Length: 382
Ligand SMILES: Cc1ncc(COP(=O)(O)O)c(C=O)c1O
Image (tube, rainbow, N blue to C red; front, side):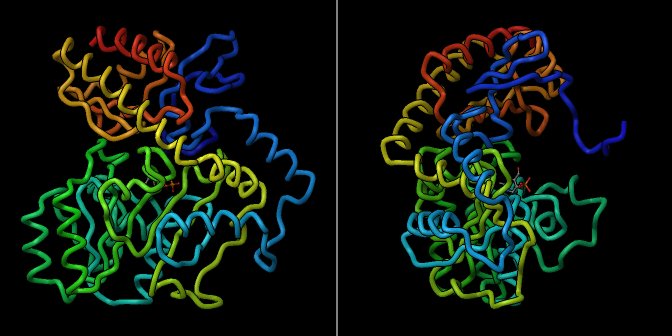
C-alpha cells in the first residue's frame, strides 16, 4: 500500500542495527547475511563511517558539479590506481547509472555489437537492462537497445566461435566475474583468457561490472584481479558510499577522455556526504584487510562444504571470498526466508534456489560460526 509493488518484502519491523545484527521492535537480534545486498562492507552503523557522515553534514551536503569535492579526487585516485592504468572517474549514484555511463561511452566510441552473457546482471534502467542476461526481466520492456547479443557464460568455445566470425563488428564485451544476482557462478580462467586474447586483434572495449563483486568482496580490490581480466571500463557501486548512494564508472587508458563537457551528468552525484563515507571505506581496503577477507571467505566456504556433505538438499557451493552461494536442489525461495526468520538469520535467495551470502567484510570468525550454526538449522527444515 502506498508504495510501488516492485519488491518482495520481509515483514520485519526494524528498530536498529549494529555490525552484522539487525534488531526488531522487540529487541530480537537477527544475523544479517547479506548486508543490504552487499552495500555495508563494514556492517551496520560502523563508527568510522558514521563519524565521517556526521562531520560532513556540518560542512555541506550538496554543492553541485560546478564545484569539486576533495574526497571525490581522493576516491577517484584510488579507484584508478587499482586498475594499474591511468584513467578518469565519472561518478553516479547507483550501479545501473554507472553502467549507463559505460554504455554511453561505448556508443560514443564504437558502433557495433555489444556482447553480454546469460545471467549477467547490470541493472534495471533501460540501457543496463538491455545488457542484463535475464530474459524474464527484459521481456516486458522490449524493444530495448539494439545490437546486443547474449552468449552462454563460461562457454569458451561458443565465445571463440562468435568472436572469430563477428570480431570486427564487436564494440564491447560486458563481464561480471562473479555473478551476483545470477547465482554466484565464477568466471573461468579459460573464458577470461579468450576475452583478453581476441581483444588484441579486434580492439573491443571490455567492461568489468564490479558493482557487487568489487571493492574487496572477493578478497581482491576488484574481483577481476583474481582472473587477470584486462578491462577498459570498470563500474563500481553498492559498498562505495558506505551505505549511502555512490557509484563510479572508471575509464582507463586510451578511453580515459571519452567524455567531453555536456556528454553526461548528474545533479546529485557525487554527493558529498556519500563521498565522506566512501573515503573511509576505500581507506580501509588495505592489503592486510583484503587478505583477511580471503581467509574468512575460505573459512566460510570450508564450513559450507561441510554442510553440503551432511545435507543432500545442497547441490553446490559457489562463489568467491565473502560472496558465496549455496545452490539447493530445488527452488525453495520464500520458505528459506521464512525459516530463516524463525531461526533469526536473514537470508537472501537468488534464482529461486541459491542462498546468497554477502556478509559484512569485517565479520568475525565467531560470527561466521554463528552464521553456520543458524544456517544449518534452516537447511534441516528443508
Ligand atoms: C553486478 C551488478 N551490476 C549492477 C547492479 C545494479 O545496481 P543498482 O541496483 O544500484 O542500480 C547490481 C545490483 O544488484 C549488480 O549486482
